[in-house]
Length: 65
Ligand SMILES: [Zn+2]
Image 1 (cartoon, rainbow, N blue to C red):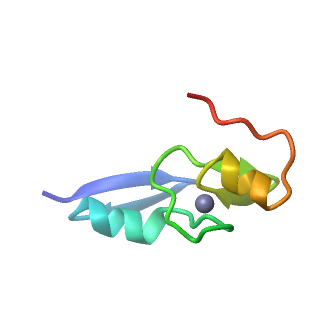
Image 2: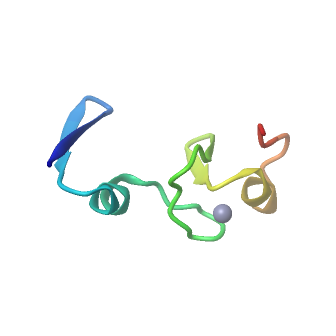
């Protein structure tokens, strides 16, 4: 039941989703949670959402709901 994740030109093979998340999900630079949803990228920095981006001083970030 393995599956492949293609990202940024590389192919990663996993046998469970939790392994893929642990290996590949970015970590929010404010609250340190692993970003498994859309997340927010601002100038190369990752956050779990607009609230954490704003808490780090990133202006103009709005969550799309
Ligand atoms: Zn966060």
